[in-house]
Length: 225
Figure 1 (cartoon, rainbow, N blue to C red):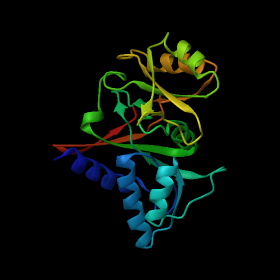
Figure 2: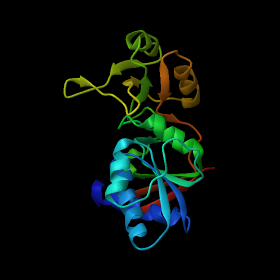
Figure 3: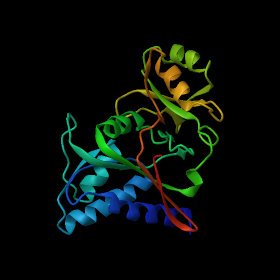
Figure 4: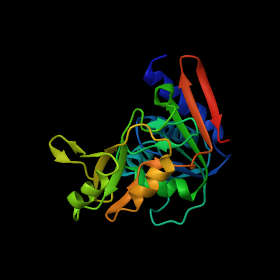
């Protein structure tokens, strides 16, 4: 199947992870948007779900598909969060942040009882960093000083789109840190987070319960060891 078809299959399969009713964390990105559409269809059919969006983009999607939303302030009693990922390693650690929403995604992930990730099989790797840099959200203040510190861990590139710096929903900049394959992504995460000016990293270590992978051979369900 095509990559887009695989994403649709993964998003549809993730609905089996939902409770009968309750609060659902709504991830960000193209695959998560397909899941939000599936939840919207369930709400339209009479299921009682309320959502916590991880970005302004997922908020707009939820509103479009008719999903009631809880306030941003929290706290929330989230049964399950379903989100996408940019890279998944053999231990089910993740790189997220291609859409610059990883700080809010990590907050909702932390507040959720269970976390389910939906990807196509092109997102799988043996070690994180084989395919993607690590997105790091940094404060605007002294961001070049922060970038200098980031560069001691890997090549740090200020993310720019259409000639302007990418700005997160929380008003910060994003640097992509090219580390290469990471034998210990947890250690890299700790080193990045120790730098003043770093808001959050796109490394999600030990934060996943289930990964649903769609590919040519169908759907696989990977669980935390």
